[in-house]
Length: 117
Length: 112
Image 1 (tube, each protein chain N blue to C red):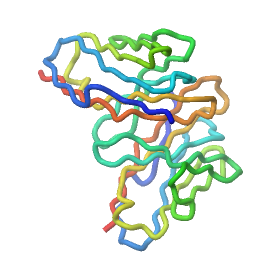
Image 2 (tube, each protein chain N blue to C red; image 1 turned 90 degrees about the vertical axis):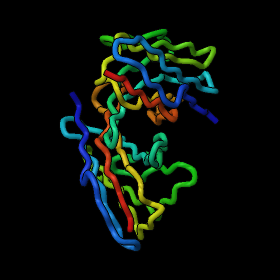
Image 3 (cartoon, each protein chain N blue to C red; image 1 turned 45 degrees about the vertical axis):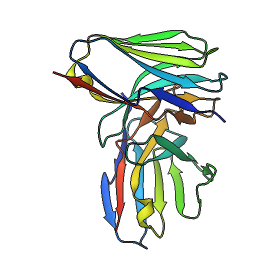
Image 4 (cartoon, chains in turn orange, red; image 1 turned 60 degrees about the vertical axis):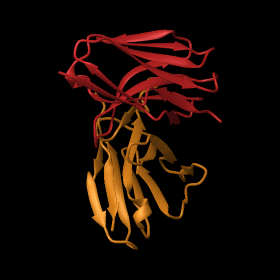
């Protein structure tokens, strides 16, 4: 089955620093990937749609200058949290859709837990 | 604006029981609906996907139904097992953009 990986699986950083999270589709190509965040005991909230070769589309209320998204290849999207603050601490999950299949399914990564101290 | 609600928020049942998880959505013009499972601290595993033209989907002990007109979906789990303990999320896709709107989930505990 289709596999999506994320790296790192967890990261702790100091307030004011930047953190990059990678999302990779391992055995399929994905022209579109999605980034979600999830607070404890809450559901997933879509942050942005990552499009290969073009700018990401951000959801209302998400600061695009703070959450930089780059989708430079058909198998990799990155999310950089710039000037991180404790309120950015969350579980970040990406998903990807197989561009070559007619399926509607999305495949989710295992998530990255970010803790900002 | 689409809102997805899941009831109950938490459920604890003894092993072997059949159970039903509920999902409701306010805008019936959905493209499809998916049920996911999430284990603590982990990502999501897709369980079932129901397209808007379908009424139900089955996979093993799981059966999901969709009533678009009333804005409801149910996930039926037969003969529950402790390994079924997880959070179950439903999500709707409104159009072909593949953007998903998630419910808040039902945390299920199946007691041995």
